[in-house]
Image (tube, rainbow, N blue to C red; front, side):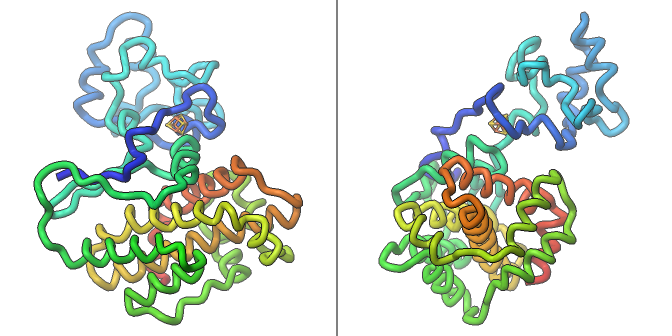
Length: 303
Ligand code: SF4
């Protein structure tokens, strides 16, 4: 059975218009089947493939500013242009989609580090549902708990922060407080992908008008619901044991708190915060924390 959020099929890469292209700054490994196929490509593109791939542990040799060597001046992919989309390696073909293999199901979704995916996720106004495609699932206590958590996170009778507390209570945790200034220091000491993230972290150390932001954001609070549901859907059920599930619920609560605080801090400095900027904050958090295994597990292990 395959499971996916109901907005999943609406995703479209914005290609050349993307400001944080996934072909810049990330190491891109090439699966062995694709590497073999690339070896047999002839002509000018074949020569480039031979030159621009590290064949020892196949991956693209990133160029200036850590650009993929096949990302052209229009920010389009020369491999797609020259060979077709079906000739991409696994990572390039899948991104920004993620996949969690669970005992009775494969769960897929869109990663928040992609700006088009983040835009799509935050744009959802309804209570996002999970589409179950295939045979009926087994009765699984972790999935049942996650379903209950998602219901709790979507209970609009409560504020988003009350819902996060209710989620933790469901997991048996009633004493989780996020001290933002302390977390600013902890984030500062983690691995960095983009120096712009440092500036964002620094805003957390300035006075923040949380009350003003709560008032400003009240009609868009559902964006934080979508984020909470995203983090729980993606990280909760594939934890190795029950203890890790609780840590992952705390991670979801922490992630929403930090993304909210970054928004409130930027609102305090600018006096406004557009939807695009709110999307960009969520994208940046995901790129820097969620998509760095080192950072993600340093945080989860500490919770
Ligand atoms: S980050 Fe997303 S929108 Fe941007 S190029 Fe990659 S897949 Fe496309």
